[in-house]
Length: 296
Image 1 (cartoon, helix red, strand yellow):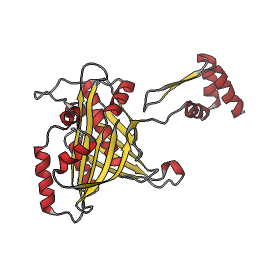
Image 2 (cartoon, one colour):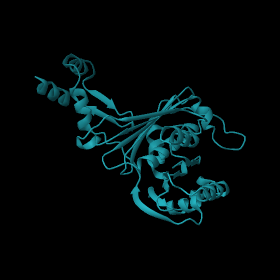
Image 3 (tube, helix red, strand yellow):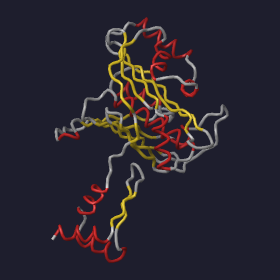
Image 4 (cartoon, helix red, strand yellow):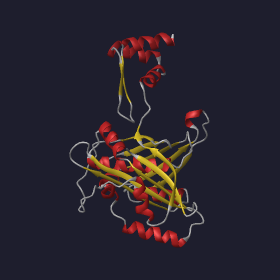
């Protein structure tokens, strides 16, 4: 089961978030049928968004957008603190040869661009406020470094970010996916920070660690070493869109009456495909007639 954990260390001066998102990514790439390099980039963005969203309050929502000039065209991920996440890439078929070190060329498929972060409060309970928007240029396109750069420049939080995806040729394709985010808060002891930096430098490769059976708690220990930590929250992670037939009907109902009549006359119905999860909803003649009746 995929999980994300949020915790603290050193009396709250160190914040830590870790997640295993293997099953979530398998669901995401199964729905969008992404090529290997696109899957690696997609998994990193989805996981980074899950980690950041774990710090939100209930009913808040976080959206991360990577707008770029590489073959993938762009990546969007949306997550809530309850562990639900959804997203899509503009070009699912974007793919490049592996780099000389055998790793995915994520920076190549992403290219240059901008990382946007949008935080919305009270979205699901009618307490909607003006969203917070932050953005930074992509400094590497490797995603983890770009998240760290965003946190340092836009939120003034020095952070270490590790994000990884390990794929295989046969289904379920995703062998391991996860991430670690360690944030240095005001008042942190410089010696503790240096100790964490050294621990991370010596840490094993994240995806290999997960593939060998590491838990989310093990990932935190991998990053903090012998520094003790307190878990504040633990949440199940899953790819969950929230779209439905009722929402599809609502979308069609919002169209101009003549447009709905055209669907009925020319296509004998309508098909609505959700961009976030690729689910298709078919509205038959009876449904369209009922919509027209309600409009009248």
